[in-house]
Image (cartoon, rainbow, N blue to C red; front, side, top):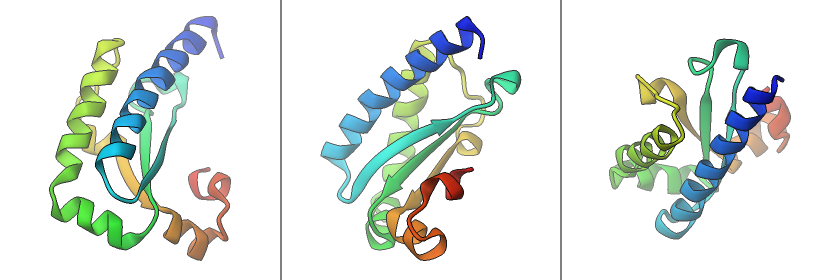
Length: 113
């Protein structure tokens, strides 16, 4: 990773931590988020994964129209550090601890890899 990539990654991490803190206090069942990126294809390769505890809580999040609000916050925070997402729905996904446990025995590295 180049020095500029490390700087960009650190900025992304900082703003996504702010988003995570907001989501933890706003959306029942929200647990954490992470990002994956291949800097040789940045920003097209950027993927943000938002994780809830259960499928039921993720379903309530969708039912309450939380995803457009959370996606808008992610887009806004990333834009503040110069990262533009042209199609947020292609970059932001949702998952659950429940699904990872059932399908990957709780091994997120395998699930996200």
